[in-house]
Image (cartoon, rainbow, N blue to C red):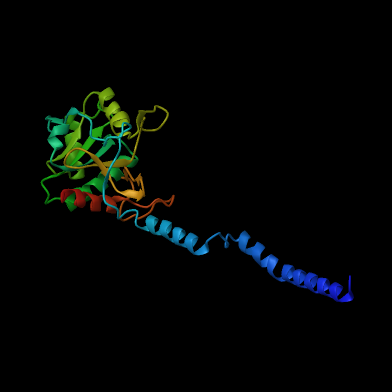
Length: 255
């Protein structure tokens, strides 16, 4: 091998060494920062699209909630007595857009918050004869029609389509847990003796549960009923959903 060849190999080795010293750390640094991909422009577009979907998640068209059998989830048949002593069934709500909740009158925690929010919604849609609320007590032993009527007066319930209903305890709990998947349970270990969801379900004029999408193929399903618009966000960082519930009620009323 000639000296010229030796010099060539030395030169090449020197270039490789310099490249390694200067550029390899930068490449490693970019990988460590997740700044290098197979196709950076494509990945950036996907990332931006995902973020935009999150931002638009509460602006989607309202969707139907699917059943386990692939159909659309509908309000189960029910029949209860309301605060006026009248028998109210699911058919009384056909042709109306309405919100469903499960509560009890002696609840010292989330129920007052939920019903103050529902009062605000009631007043927002006071000019719509086809808007209503269905409130089911989970403590029917105490919440008689007379008790429910006093509760309605105290809270300022004036909408004639807002029925506070009582009836057989087992039937109510089945409606909540199996009909709507809105959790309710008796729990003697807590201060008020009951556990229940603080969410609202939104029902369209044909009796189907409706909601907006949070992301593609991921419906919101229920609306948080505890946090008020004035609060905006709770101590755990959860945002209020009363505003979007109002928006979605307005959409369904136009259908």
